Image 1 (cartoon, rainbow, N blue to C red):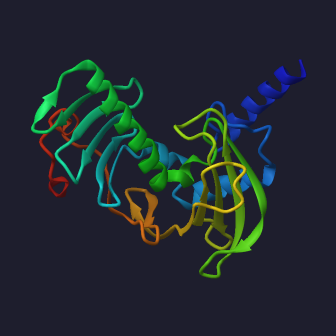
Image 2: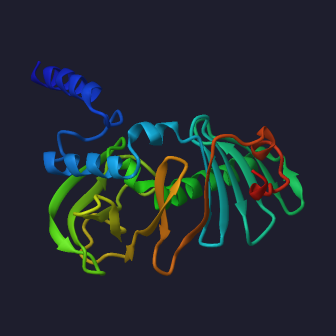
Length: 250
């Protein structure tokens, strides 16, 4: 009964919040200060309504992949920039089509393999771009673990992000530095395993620019995201035709 009441109470609170948590967010395991900071980040990035109303996003991931993501439908286009492979998929139903080595792939097991790889790429590449909007995601636990300056000297609150049964690498851990003045994520560190004491990397999260009605950052030190664009509409052929689109036309 206590658990039920807690759940009902949490639902009531989430409905009142301008930034309600996703179903499955670990509210019980997260602390109140961390949740407050997550809400401040969302507001600083443009606000939850602006994020929900953001329709289409494209970006270049490290010069290796160009992605176009329809947030509303789950349609995603992944163009490998170092070969001719293109995958058109829907990340909600895991269905898709594959173009590779000059022709469409039709063998079902091969299609399934490349669609699975493309979805994993989208999960990874989109997290590098939009993580600040996902601080209250399903399966996520966030904790405020102190205050610390970023590598460029900004006073920041530090959040720890851990995961339960979500994504392709649920054992990961992140530390996220939130600038106290701007409430923007300004740095992050990645730990392959929750028990790791030393991060796999610590990188900046800077150079914010307004795209549509939200802020997005591409500066990641030696691993920048480029060609970031937000669209209110794109032709349907972007998600149905293997010919690579010239997004500058839109």
